[in-house]
Image (cartoon, rainbow, N blue to C red; front, side, top):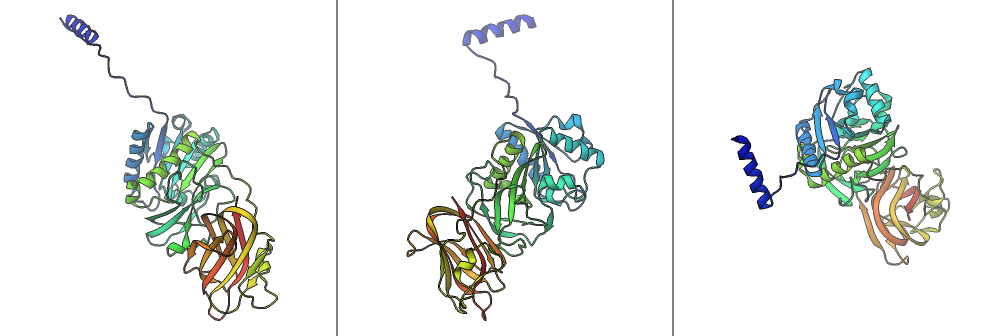
Length: 383
């Protein structure tokens, strides 16, 4: 009887032209989310795991999650295209597990480090290279501006060039720029408690020991994982680690467009401190102005360039408030970045976007009222 019923159903289906519903497509890849903690534990971990599961569902990749370090063995790791270290802390793997993970990366595996992944395994030098930099400190949770340095990578494409968001902002023990491809930096002038100066990478990627590494310092708060832009950022990092999507090459530093080009200033303290001292590549010669506000120094690049970065190294007397301005003719100026409450030292202003022949630093408030503006280095980068 059952056979006859099945046969009849088949005839009806065929007569009506119906077809069976196809099975879901196989996932493009599988990732492992690892969130073991041996120190501080972030309450955002469950939210982060769910967000990654949601990204997987929406983007056709499978997600497994664990805090079981014994899963770090050759057989199990081979099932995954990337392992996401989600706010891990402390020493989470033993020596055998560490070796298995090293071999996994050397065989072409991917690594995604999220936030406190940089606060993990301080005694494991290989891991330190993989993540890129170790955590040093952080101020209170607050709103800051993230400057996008690479607008084409999957983790940053489409994000606001000046991305304002709230998080716990890490300072790192070293600046990884020379070893990694920087994707985004923190503008320390937009919040309190930054210790890395004008060049504060917050997200980066690189090829590493046969595999791929992506790291973002963002993701402390539960709210992070509900933000559309942050989820886009995280998804792009996962795609790079798992599939190699995006250019993470570390290239030679670009040439300084201002080097030894004509520089002029509103004033000089005396003849020993001309404007040309700021563009001569020397870290010991400097331009110094009269002791009043406002003051400016400008450089003629000799031709029109697309400007994306201006690096300043101040002496002990510095510009507390100043503007970076550009001009096509040296007469009409456009402000492309405003800095307030700078504390001197190195100000590396990245994420700029202007086409100009002239670049000017226009100071409106000195850091020391009894002195002028004093600048060792005025560098301009672009294409």
